[in-house]
Amino acid sequence: MVKVLIADDQALVRTGFRMILDAEDDVEVTGEAADGLEAIAAARSERPDVILMDVRMPNMNGIEATRRLVDKDDVDPIRVLILTTFDLDEYVYDALRAGASGFLLKDAPPENLVQAVRVVARGEGLLAPSITKRLIEEIAQRPPQHTAPPEALRSLTQRELEVLQLVARGLSNQEIAKELFVSETTVKTHVGRVLMKLGVRDWVQAVVLAYESGIVRPGVG
Image 1: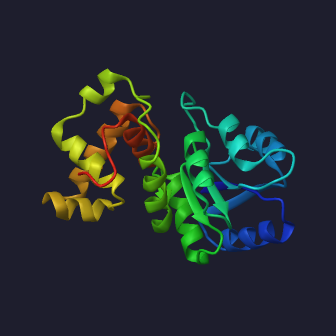
Image 2: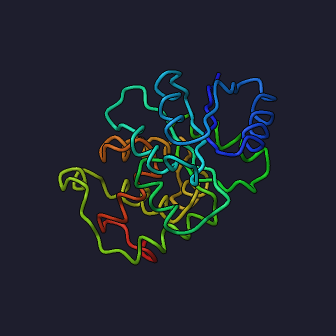
């Protein structure tokens, strides 16, 4: 059972999300929050698997709340799925840099919301297709920050680098398997090793790290 906390300042939005998610046998909404401060308090007491986090909220916005909640050293991390009506570049970039595992627009179909919760709960990253392109364009305009430890980058094999480049281009595991003429299971194994070596939680964080470090460049690979 995937436990979900809904953080949004609009009661009608929270009610709508709750109805969609509670209709699923494997998802349970365990709480709600009307702002970032409430989200932090509820998350720390209830320990949900996934938080649906709005960006624009009073008292504390969703990005700052995410930054305070996400701890890469936590053995049982809370994963944040950012939900917003806005797809502006700064929201995407800042949310993912804060540690969010996914970013989905509120106008997505209900089935996409349910699937997104399941994907993020499994420890995988998720971005709306339109946002992947915007994220890459945003990072392309920023100079490499070289935030990854050099030894971690050097530890990646050539095949793992290829997989990371394809993931960064927005390809799915199935598409990567076809591109590299390997099985999806092999791709998942490579992705798992990349995450472990780079010390990140999911492939969304790996993509951000890869672009910021300069090991993957927009339009290359």
